[in-house]
Structure formats: structure tokens, C-alpha cells
Image (tube, rainbow, N blue to C red; front, side, top):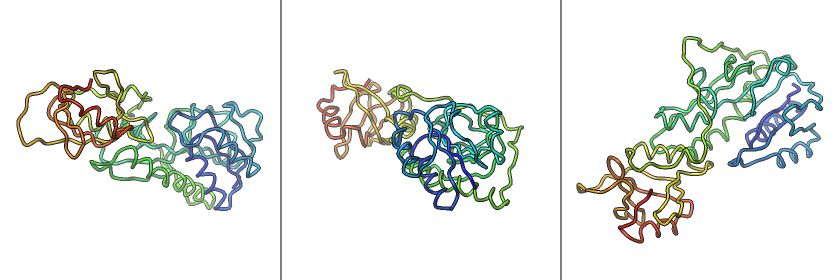
Length: 297
């Protein structure tokens, strides 16, 4: 089939590689400026297209491209597409959405799923319509979210699953075996809105379990959970866990209490939390533990 690619990130590039490997023709590639945490941006996608002589655009209007394709695949596109564009492709546009439709629509859906204590991650492949994440569903891929899973492990799962699921759906369209299911209108959608780095700032008055979820939901490839010392130094936390002390204690939330195997243990609103990994790991931990008078804010 003649396939158009629209979107961003290494997931779009890797989807393109798999599309080519399966014998499909890539008719064009359209992208947009990458998010700060992206592994692959406009320059890398332009190089990918140039190496394979694929018409390329980094203009959201893509009006200068020849859009002759049977189907289009979308990963992390930045806008809701309108009907004139959707109608260009006889088999529509298939989108990879890292959320359980029809419930989780919108942005940062896996981050929100961790914060919302969901038990599984879901990748949905659906046909795009002129409404956000509302089109008929082609297939779903599921993965349990365990207590130690974070955005690092879930993003690694998506690295493999997004290209594979999109091409599975593409092949199903090509051979006529793929069936679409309309979204269940009785399920009330949950609109997930974008998250900014500052949204991952820790409030030490919260319960330890809640703080751990904030850390898990902001781990790499995202920027990490934020806190700061009284000196003003910002600390970026990548991994943490609830700590169960062997004693009762009196402490203000944010109080640095002691260390376990070199890891700072900090009082929270209902208990203690052990900081396992920081962005600047050894120096940050050493400064946090330099005095038991230290507090994190």
C-alpha cells in the first residue's frame, strides 16, 4: 500500500522503518517541532526522509506535498485533523494513542494513568475523525502496570508496541481482515490535558504513596519529579519508594531524616519516602544528607 506518515518522535521514524520492511511504499512524511523530551526531532526525521527519497514537510499545513496515498499512519500529531484532510485517503488515517479509548482521551495519558492508579497501560489504534480520539477502534494492546513501573518502563514498551501495532493494523487493512469497532458512547470520556514539568513538583505534605506516583509519572524520558533544598538548589528525582521505618517519629514533611544505603529518607505527610535516584545522583544525595537540619521544599 501507499502509506503517508504524519507525526513526531522516534516512534514515527521506527514505524516508517517497519512499514518499509513490510513492503509498503511511503508516499510522504510530515512532522512538526518536537517536544523537549523527544529522542528524535525534525532534523532526524528530515534525514530519514532524505535517505529514502520520501517527500518531507515540517509545515503543519503540508499543502505543498503530493498527498497521494491509500492510507496514513499518525503518531503524536499536534492538532485535530479536519475532514478535508481526513478524506484524502481512501482507507483513512490510523492513529496510535497511548490510552484506553474511549475513556482516556487527550494528552499525557500514560502519565495520568499512573497518577490515577490504573492497573494497565493500553495502546489503542483507531481511525481518526474530526473529533479528539473519537474514531472507531482497530485494535488494542495491553500491559499491566506494576507497582515498580514508571514512564521509563512504559515508554520502553511503547517503543516496541507502537510501530508493531500500527503495521499490524496496516497489514490488516491491506489484506481486508481488519475490523473496526465504534467507540462505546455509554462510556463517559476522561479528557487528559497536557502536563508541564512544574506539575511534577513534589508536595511533601502529600502521602508517601502519592509522591511515589508523581515520581513514577515523571521519570525519564520525562524530566523527573522536582523538589528543592532550603539553599535554593533544585533536585530532580527519578526513582523513589515508600520507606517503612522501624520506629515512630516526629518530623515536619520534607525533613531529611536519615540514609539507607546512601539513599536519603524524607518525611512525608503520612510516613517516609526513600529517594533511590536523582538526576545528579551522588552529588544531590550527598548535599541532601549533609545535615539532618536539611529539609526539602
